[in-house]
Figure 1 (spheres, rainbow, N blue to C red):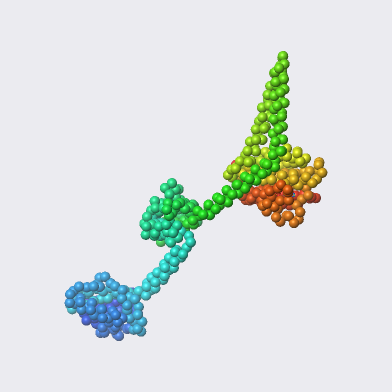
Figure 2: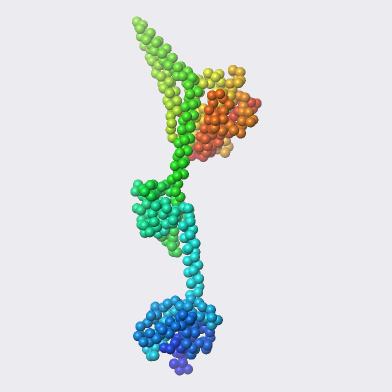
Length: 504
Ligand SMILES: Nc1ncnc2c1ncn2[C@@H]1O[C@H](COP(=O)(O)OP(=O)(O)OP(=O)(O)O)[C@@H](O)[C@H]1O
Ligand SMILES: [Mg+2]
């Protein structure tokens, strides 16, 4: 085999191994080489194409253009495709048409010129592109239809995407937001530092779970809208974090509504506390009168002692000490009354539930005495501390105790008893039980005991139990009724274990 023949064999092997279809034509467009891939792609054998015009591989539209290209190149030497490549429609033997990418080169030194064409089947790529396009359209439709704000930011926290809802809440159009720094564009200045800390944590630690936080935005006409955000870090194909995707819900209105409900509830509780105070007024004045009377007595005794020739200083000192003590006692009663009546926001603190109950003593003792009721405290000394609103919990116990005192009025004097008991359950819950031996709650009333304004008393408001239950539930607890044996009622406050779990 001579060198030229060997060279030609090598060239043939090379051509056949090429993945692209390779077609060589002369200056008239006559096919001179048609490799294996070309055979596979077009469905022709090389023999069927060699010596024929390459137009046979093109659609009608491209055929005419191809002749024009070729002629123009031969005439002017200006190539429109050489070295660039373009997308064309190619035609198989069976007549089917497929998208192809054609790159053309002129074989150097050939005269008249010959050209080599490389053809890639673009069908799959085109299908993928179409699929991608329709996927993107669908995603866009979802984004636009979403009733939640969706915002994409790059690693520098510039806006890369914002959906219709986002634009709507912000009162801005997409174009004015894209590329803008999110913080500077829409976040109130005083909240930017906090937001930047959130994003920092996201970008740096890229937690698996979305980060939830609240951060307001400046909306239309300078209004501030409170938004609850869920954000995730997004990564590129190499796992490098390159941005953040956030969805946000406008919670301004629901927050306002919650606040209004809270305020309304506090107002009702305030009124109820005033009402309770009103009912207790005679008891309270009695309770205050005792120390005041004592003070008067000791003061008079002191004056008498001083008027003596040789006054007994020790006795005078004792009188003064008693005066001070009784005044402190009166002051203490007034202080507790005030803290109970004062309209105040909820304030939870770690407290000893037994002590919270004992503190009610001065307020209830007189009331109980006047109604001839024995109030018995049975407090579990091993009770864990609890995280609760002291005044509100006292309000609950007072309501239950007053109901108990009312209930035992039907019993003969000397048999009227109300017990207040505390205990913890094996599940770690805390309970306050208020038990009485009154007539109990009639069967038909039991289902509606906690309904506001339900009362069987001439001067009752019917709010006591409703308010108490709402307070207990605000502590994530329960207030239940049980009949007592052999007669009477038991009201049970159950506070959840976690209220006592994190004790200091
Ligand atoms: N310990 C109890 N024994 C029997 N019945 C009770 C007892 N506690 C409450 N009830 C019944 O439940 C009703 C509602 O009680 P609630 O404390 O809500 O209102 P009230 O006591 O009637 O009015 P207020 O609390 O304003 O004085 C009472 O009127 C009474 O009929
Ligand atoms: Mg009541």
